[in-house]
Length: 196
Image (cartoon, rainbow, N blue to C red; front, side):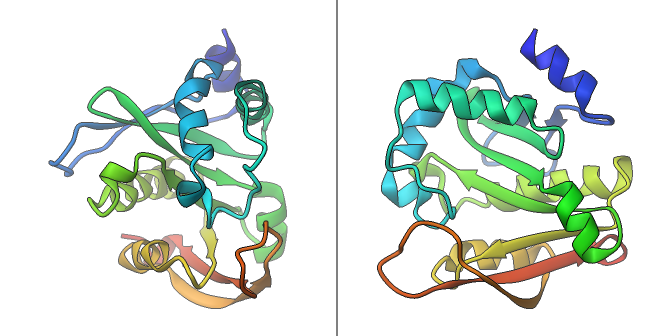
């Protein structure tokens, strides 16, 4: 029921297959509260969420169910759960569409992704799923620009964005939990005309 409601409130949304990636069978599926147990494992791991700009230090099953419910109710974002070989391993979204569109002057959103299973880090999954979401955003949903932001400490995410063709264009104040050192966000953007 919740997935049907999500589909109705998100024009052009669809679940996506990842083609051209051969190490694992990857799919992007509609978020659901039923994924709370798996996603709680990621958000409870400080190493997984350290650069996300969100405080997960008070994670609990109830709070994770609430977070997933808020994702399902958010009409200003498109969200997917990443499935690898039948296992839930992360999430990806294009969020803050209204604010980002206003900032950039055209239909835009902010790309965010998380590979929650550390055993799958460094295998190109983030690049593969982000490329698929970007193709959908530009070709099926009318986005003109997609923005992303990353703290300088997150070298892996910077590499993903650069592989996808994003270019650095500025800095934003860091508004997440403390990382033990001063930081900021490096902002990146990818116009549709320059996408892969």
